Image (cartoon, helix red, strand yellow):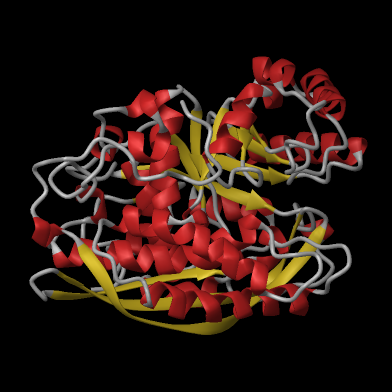
Length: 463
């Protein structure tokens, strides 16, 4: 596989079967912001988040014959995760993302070449990076932040493309509509292959395991509550387990307090076992890149296994334990840890080169995220499967349309272990308008997202 800094150079084998009318160009882009308060703070990566700003994007496209279609997508900006800073306050990093969005909107609208949405995104990504460099902020806008800001623009184009062809997006990734094979984006190992080989194109998986998130400051038991919200939703872990019929839990850990991390894991396992003893529980442990080194992770795993062998066996995978700059952090290889459990790359995964770097130092899994763009999610899903990596879908506290988008990825990529979907915990008000139309996604009773209904045209969220 060729190493590249972006997902593709568009030099792959052409598909002679694609009619010219299949391609689209972008005619118009509009966007807006929507602010939402969290029901309760969500602590991860050492920071408690209590609000979100959605970037909502609408685009209009047309094919060469002039046939129009409209697409929509939404994504939380997630600046605490996408643009972490020890020197800049929350409002400053959020403002930087808003400034970037104001550049990306006109930039996307100005691109007038016809193509498949993945070709359009591949061509625009270098320009998006240049736009990010224009935002006056120190430190500079990181690439991950650019991807998150650009993701609803990319997704809206995919949504419009699917609607123009009267298909789900996941039925638009074959040689009948894609002009180039995957070697154009992922290198020679993919010559002659198209994305449809790596997706469930006919219909989505009927259900996906839901990972309930336990944030770093979340109360586990009633005795831990400092005050009650009293809004009718659960406020302790046993109540959430019963309310949603849970069987998968994501455990947010600190990475700078080994005893706390161990006891938190042991405590959650004990509560899960006591609440639903008949369930074969599964856990994800997420350090949000805060472990000082891999030795910390190995000691954590050793101690957890010593204190609760049952709980250790229930750990399905480990999410990015050490810092995101893999080139700077070459000493923290994951080979030994990956012998115990899959170690999943998340914050570091910004392009194909990052995936290759992660594999080289022992990462064995990939976190797919709608917030990094539909184009990237599809291409990385193909690469992850080709290289037999563990696959999961992770969240950005996605509510509403963005959760439907994320759930669709989980339901269409074979082998995905489950999906984190925590907006029902922290942003329930933002989900309320969607529950009646998509009850299987927003009304959880058996620990599953029921995804069989996600078959509408485009991304399937907005008609």
